[in-house]
Structures are given as structure tokens and as C-alpha cells.
Length: 434
Picture 1: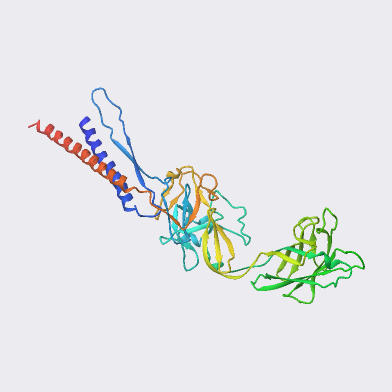
Picture 2: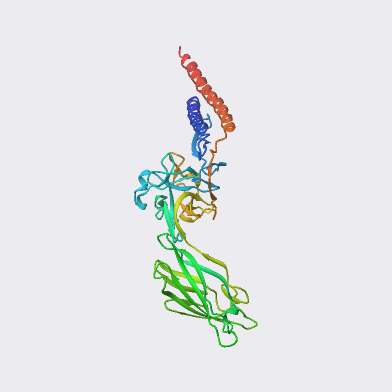
């Protein structure tokens, strides 16, 4: 039996080294494949129950696996939608059938990197047919509550609906000074108009004019102003909101707002210092300042000075490009300079990365050996950040693979010699009968 077991061990050695040669061939062939994870083999001996009279060779067993936990070097590219995870973790993707499927029926896969481009439908995909998945953002850039243990809230990343966008103005901050001398007895009482351009929900530019009129007393200073708001989108001659503002002239709080009375459709919240005006496209909040606060509108002995008037919103814009930041937020950049968050791309992780099931095109799927999937925010927990303009190189080291190739060749030849020697010994045994 010992001669037979030696023959069996030699054959197993040939098979094991053949498997190792296959992994080396794969590694060398994919040495320039972006995102490729090196294949490895793990040899383990097999031991049979031994008898005292003879030794029986158990042979060798081989297990091949992908070293998915290894990370390759990142190289810079000129494409904004080239993405790679810098560190541990993988990007969520799906195949072509998953684009139009329900989330519960979609095939969820993971990949370390991808050179994505927008196809004819606006979906970001790779040349090999992997479609990027992400959590869609609301118009204000928020993601909301999403499931992190499954891909139920993930959607194929599509940028066609964002080709044109308009961001309506919802907030205006006023940093202006009103001249205290205008409220002095004998002052002419002239109004100070302040036109402010804003954008409606169709991206059209409109003008909101605030007219500041001082109250002129018979003697001393009144420190009182009337503010009327006129909107060019409606009736430019009709006020859409009035304010009566009184300023403090005490040594401690001189020049600061003392009280505000809002009428004619306007409302004032003293806790945040904002006035709300109802516009045709929706309400606009105007920050004028809180009582006894130094920011917002002041009344000092200086000329009328609208030094800091800011607003949000943007006119209609044409999509110029999309970029992804380190936190995984995919943002659209328009020719007006406006930036809008479209999606958040999470980074998937499992307890045993090497237990993932390998698929085509450097993609992987969750298996029983890998453990459950968890979708992290990029750069949080154990996962790395998402790098745009980058691709991950193959983890193959050509020098190491060529060294392993020589070792495998020698080992295969040695096992073949075992088979040859056992054959000669059996031949000698057969010749004993003659």
C-alpha cells in the first residue's frame, strides 16, 4: 500500500501545482487589469491513519482564493467619474438587468474601482456592464434614513434628469446700515431703495425691492423706519409685506434693532431674526437680525451702506460635469457655478472580505463565508474614502509571480518524478514473477 499511496501523493501533487499554475497565469494575465485582486493558493497536507508496519502517504490538498482584502495603488486619471476606494471597502454596482428591476430583485454586486461613463440613458456604467448604485439625494442635498444592511434604498446613478436645473431663492441675508441722521427732526425723509435680484423656481431672474423710509419727528431722533417690499414678479406697485423697525439708542445697545412689527402679509420671528415674505414661487426668508444683535440691519451715524447682501439660489444651468468627493457625494456642476448633490455612494464592507464570491469584471457578491454586508459612509468606520479621478491598479506583482512560476515548475517536475519512480518500482515488482 505504501507504493500505491506514494503514487497517489504524486498525482495529487501534480494536480495541486496545476492549480497553482492556473492562479499564476490568471495573475500575470490580469497584471494590467484595474481593480484585479490577486488569486492565491493555500496548500495543506493530508495525513492518513498510519500502521506500524508501513507508512502511507496522504498527499496534499489545495484551496484557491482571491485576496480581496488586499488593496492596489491608486493612479490619477483625467476622468472625473473614475472612482476607487482608497482603503478597505467596495463600491456597490449591479448588472444590466438590475437597472430596470425592483430593488428587492436587483443583483447587488461590489467592485473596488470602476471607470464609469454616462450611457445613452444617463446611467453611470463601466465598459464591462457594471452600473453604479447610490442613495439619491433630495433637492437640499439630504439623504435621509436608508437601509445599511441591504441595497433596498440604492438606485442606479442617473444624471440625465439633472441636465438642466434651477435653484429657487429661499433665503436672503441683509447686512446693511441705515443712517441715524435720516430720523432726525428736519431731515428730508427720503426713502432708500434696495433692489435684490432673486431666482424663481423656473430659473428666471426677478427683483425684490426693499424700500426703507425713515420716520421724521418734530424734535430729536425717532429711530424708526418703515420697510416695504415690492416684487417684480407680481404687481410691482403693491407692497407684499411691511415692517416697522425701531432701533435702540442706549449706550449699551445703540444702533441695534429694538423691536420689529410685521404687517401686510409679512411675519417676523425674533428668535432667529428672519422675516418671511410669501412670493409667487414660494416663501422667502430674509434675515434682518435679532433684537439687540449687532448683525443684520443696524442704524449708525454712517451713510446708507448695503455692504453684505447675500442670497442662495441660481438661474437655469446646463450640466457641465459631475464629481465625487472623499465622502462619497456625487455632485453635479453647472455652467452657472451652481453645485448640487445628486447621490451619496456608500462603501460596502463584510467581516470576511476574502469570503466574497468572485464574479466577472472584478465584481464580487456576498456569500455565506463573507458574512453580512454593511454600507458605510465613505471614510467612516473601517472603510476608506472614495477617490474621484482615480483607478485602483491590479494587486499582481509580476516579479513575485515569476518567482512563484519557477517554484511551481520545479515542484511539478519533482512530483512527476515521483510518478515516474513509482512506475519503475511497480515494473520491477512485475518482473519478479518472470
